Length: 209
Image (cartoon, rainbow, N blue to C red):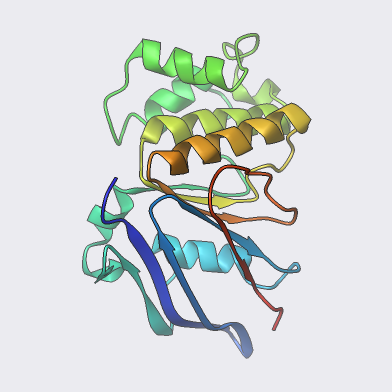
């Protein structure tokens, strides 16, 4: 993955009279992880949604590969994967069915690829049950499988280790390290320090307005 760069330039956003983001700037290149920290209400999720192009700044701009993302949101979205607080899963479908529909609208998927992704996140014993029977940690693991299957160079993650046990947290760190070792980029909003060891980790702390 070459020529990958994400930048935010002087990003401002208000919610009514509350100045949520105050001139936030960031720069990230292929092979790097940016860790967003800050107290509740500091704007971490808002900034992630802005980087996704789901919320537009009132001042400033977001650039991908040197171009304002609003010029071609469809092209930009084809190169990113966003996983928020709630995994995008349908309660009455199995893990495999969810991945086939969620990821399958973006790229062709074989049954073997889905099965391997679910094996990789430790879902062998429960993946044939419907999602409504899963624990929060199991749903998070399915979301991680989807993240891997999408194959996007830019990952935008909101609390990726939420509801995961120690093994699940280690899985997340291994996935991040593997992704950036291939030249990918990761922006992750977290409450606790990521435990990646072998990749450049940058930090941006947001102050509560």
